[in-house]
Amino acid sequence: MADLVSSVFKGGGFIDITPYQYGREVCGPGYAFGPARRSHYLFHYVILGKGRLNYTRRDAKVSCIELGAGEGFMIFPEQVNTYQADWSLPWQYIWIEFDGPRMRERLEALGLSEDNPRYRPTSQEQRDRMMQEMLYIVDHGDESPLSVMGHVCLFFDSFMRSMERPTASGEERLEDRYVREAIRLIEEGYQDGITIEEVAAGVGLSRSYLGSLFKKVVGRSPQQLLMECRMSQAAELLKLTSLPIAQVGRAVGYANQLHFSRAFKSYHGMSPREWRRRGLAGTLPEREIPIMFQ
Image (cartoon, rainbow, N blue to C red; front, side, top):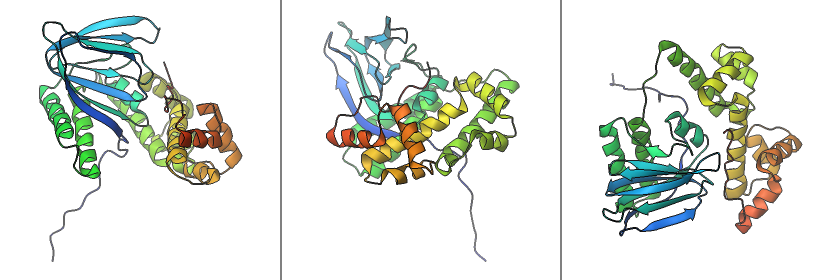
């Protein structure tokens, strides 16, 4: 008789994160970068010194914050920013650029947005782990891609856990559980053509009540999330593979190519064929994952 240890992965839906760039910089007095905008999310963590960030809010007004060691800031896609080192105590920071489906929602759940880009950890232990993972990535970028990706996931895990906020009541926790389960069903079923009615039935709620919970907890509807999952994945498949358009549509839950093409054009502003052509030419819009709610 053999000893056996067996279990299933907990948590249901796992985060899909794509890293793009990373780095570390020791800035001179008054050194500034910008104004500039990015195609993806860009997180800076300040190791030493201090500086300031000028950022454009959602209402198009510009705000400024001072930042020091142990803090950081998040730049959102298409957001115009300028950041500058202090003249007397210039900062040293590390940074990583990344993206992924539903990334905006995950960051806003932590309290980060275009209007509030400051990273203020609630756990020093998790913050220190996050910093160590960032430093490891910077210093070991020549390791295998799978190894680096593992450390990117560890970075993001510590990043999120360092900003976790306690819920205010049991009622809120129950609402969060309903929404979390609905999100899991959407993420696991969007490729198979799952409907919002099926998602609502899966969590034991009516469609209208599930919609109101979504609006309250994440600020948008479950239908918007379902569409984002499908269209983000479709855009990546069109850009990175040579699959026929009809097959791309089926891969994200559309049995009918015409319905898929109409939905894709409505979401991305161009047809799947044009998206692929511009991807090959390197002329795609900078914001590849549209902002779904304000």
